[in-house]
Length: 95
Length: 491
Image 1 (cartoon, rainbow over the protein chains, first blue to last red):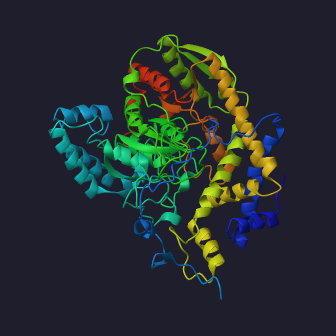
Image 2: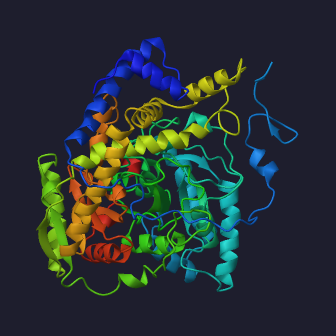
Image 3: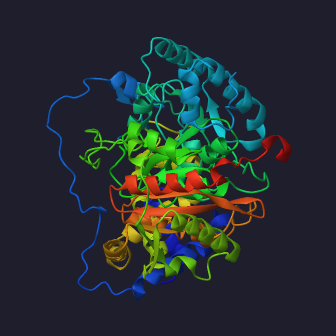
């Protein structure tokens, strides 16, 4: 499968990334080469094979629903770019 | 100072010197801090040095040793890859995105090594978000190979590998998603172990691909790797994929011989992709194991080549999901003066991530997008099972699988930057091991043109003991792991 510059711009939009105009050709060309590589998968016979999402086919266990570490909001927000009264600040969303 | 040169000594030897009172932890710490200060401007293996905290930890370790209250790692200096969260200490993942990130907690690996009495000297350089095989994608500039400073150390744990090779510390931590411990260990001539998926907790390790990521030791000797693995392994309720299994005493398991051990040699690992001089060197190492009583048996891993395509769908898919958390809101880089929320997301991410990380986010987003999910992501997960079954079949005939760790020796800086696919081929012998969740050990097996060659041993799930035992036997017979670059000269 090949990709067009429009495809790549659309994918970048979904991933919330901007691609500069002057970089688009290089990005599309390298993206295409990677797709060519991963297209080798189409040659493998996968009939009757279930997908594997965990290498030991383990399911994730659930933990008991109890408080384990208590309230450490202040510590966790210490790395935030902007907070006020315990809230994360973002640009105005609603007019 | 003891007669042992700390720059070349193993942690086990340093532990004996500490117990005998030949040297103090503070003296060792000062020795390594001085060496880092002097040589890191050349090697660029370390991003952050934590000298004050290191001295404090060393003094406490010396008090425990004086009281006879020490374990085998008490007072041993080490470096952590900058992907492990360290409480109160900058943790960048070598990305502009986390250039200002100070975590409020320790990764489980860091906490366990601290509890074992180790002394953290600082944090090592790496490929950005662990995406790369050369350490060249770091926001802080590439680490260079101590054996030849015009060459790469491998990646993504390239700073950790170069640091041990250059004698900055006897031990470092690494993480391995597709070869990121084993490939740099091979290229820098040190020992590196990727444990079984689930053996070591991922809590506090900045996530790349969650079904593949594992942390492990990077050391001078197999014995040290065994010691370090015992300290970090084991169930952690904070990681829902951590395995609830008993942890053996890996060092105690090193004893005994390997008489009758069946070692499988995959035909596919010695194909045309492999440099012939490396093949010869790896075969020399295998014949050493044969002399110890091991039996070499030819096997097939028919889907070896398919591991590359499979990995480069699954890893970017998981990465694109994991990295969606970087939005400029809760932590990490935030663009200046965002005009609205969308602008905040777009510019924070576009400014914060480097080219290789963006490329993988794009590929991951593509293979997960509606219309392509079945053709790529689901299919890759199916091939993942086929690859895993190849290994299960092989392990019906053999106990260990052996081959080269990498297709070549350390390559010149800049030589693979323009072609992501040629860079991805670096990991042809290591990727499948992560896909199948198996343990893999890379250890020095001599050199080609003065550059280290790595032997890789692959084991059954949760059978690190057999790998370590075979590796230890090899290091009892040979001195490859004792060779160290003369960094003062190569500078």
